[in-house]
Length: 124
Image 1 (cartoon, rainbow, N blue to C red):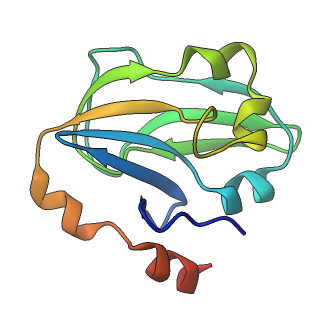
Image 2 (cartoon, rainbow, N blue to C red):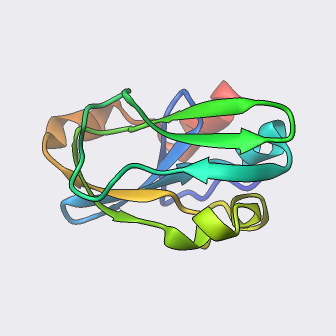
Image 3 (cartoon, rainbow, N blue to C red):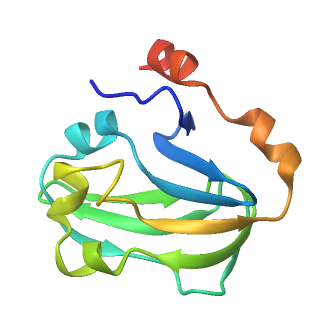
């Protein structure tokens, strides 16, 4: 199971890459294995304000549909257009090509509530 040390994680299996006041978000390698073959993705609109732990995107697999929650409050400033036409990228490369969206962080205090890689590993 790939759990990059430099990332932060949520209990709902999203990963977060902090870059200044921005947070790139996707689902973990563990989550994509559990979901199996991803066939469709719905992403938020750029400019949308999101709240921490609010459903923000949807991933559909051959099994079911899954809500993806924003790990932080802020505004959506980027979405990964590639996964809309090639959702299998999430299965193939969940931490790079398969990222979902980027949030401009509104409340830096929320960062302390994210899990470290070791804490996430203990969770799963």
